[in-house]
Image 1 (cartoon, rainbow, N blue to C red):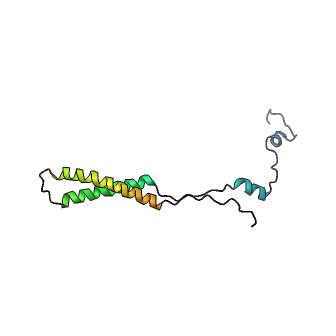
Image 2 (cartoon, helix red, strand yellow):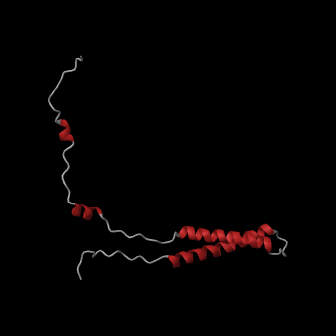
Image 3 (cartoon, rainbow, N blue to C red):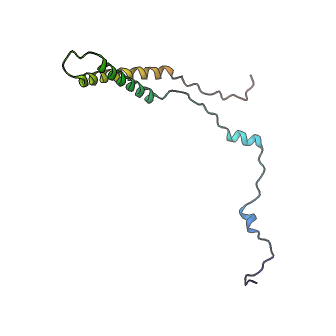
Length: 116
């Protein structure tokens, strides 16, 4: 036994808050939701250039250790000069490769439904 009043009348507030959904034509819905897009598959230029710099530094390290040091300056200075030169060369080659692999942008055809 509770002191709360008993109300046998149905609650109509739920119908006002959540109205019945209206049916939607699937053909209209698809045209409204589909957006024509083009996926561009181009290389990442920064990563290609960075890879070229890394390859240049590794090549400089190998060359500094393998080549005979006839100057008396030390292996580190030889490595530093080779690294500067070969990393610049690697960056140029990496950028040239990325530019060569990049495809030109071709917009998607928008006349899908047109009859010829």
